[in-house]
Length: 206
Image (cartoon, rainbow, N blue to C red; front, top):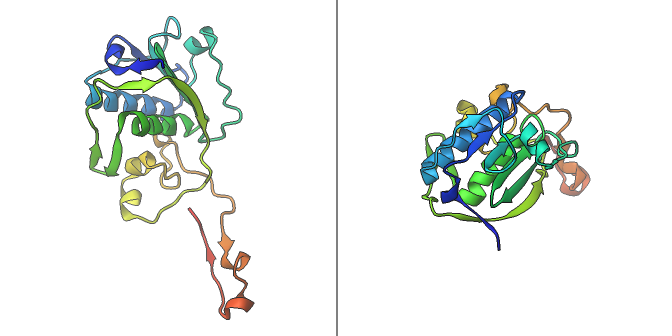
């Protein structure tokens, strides 16, 4: 099985598009920071790459296209993402505005073992010798509206973004807030008041 060896990424860099949106730029910074803490590999962030190889691609970039790597984001919505892991390349590309940022957080959790525990404590294990299985996958979150009523999320929007709570902040750097259309539902969908003998109130799922 082919693997991406973290120890062999020391001469790589992180490539973002010159037209990257704030959330994609922040995603690159988060990846840079967490990889540096986890593996002692601190990669510079650049706006271009000569080709697709030996780069971490955060969001769409010309270097990916020139390397004949085409990721269609039209079906990813605002938060879906596609990840490509190869021996000589890593690409995390998502829909806008939050997809790429959430893809980075998913990669950090799944492949580097990072855990966002509280707003002031992130568990970052030593992954300097990690070998990550090469593969491709796409993920689209099943719930479009996620809102947990924890004070810590409301007071620390950056932590909320790391947990993929998408209803807290308007900060574009953190992906901004999910526009809420109609998320209310009623218990009567499953338990009519006639059968329970009591009235039901509207609730908002997250």
